[in-house]
Length: 143
Image (cartoon, rainbow, N blue to C red; front, top):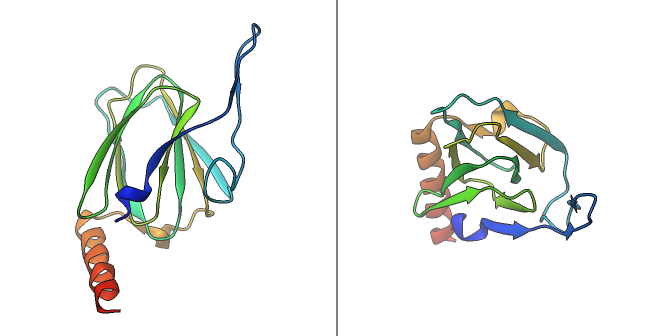
């Protein structure tokens, strides 16, 4: 199950009277090399983001500012996470459907990705994602 591989990861937090510092290192704090970084911001109230799965790309989501909710689903099991600290992030393994909503005012969601952008890696239709997951599950039970 992919959801069982997804998890919250606490990042290093160096506290100082001048402000805190947090950092992320590939293959140390997160289980992949970072090839792409993008972020979501100015998301209107009531809007949902994501609503897709990725075939081979790993991602790590961080609430850089504000908060938001992430629902992940692997076709069998569903988990919900509330991200609201910049020193925690959510690791999302491949073949995991994700929905992001409940953005607070001023929220910024930064995503670290294991792959460069490739539209062909996306499952944008839920039914296609479920079909792919069930096919992979059938293939692994035959092996």
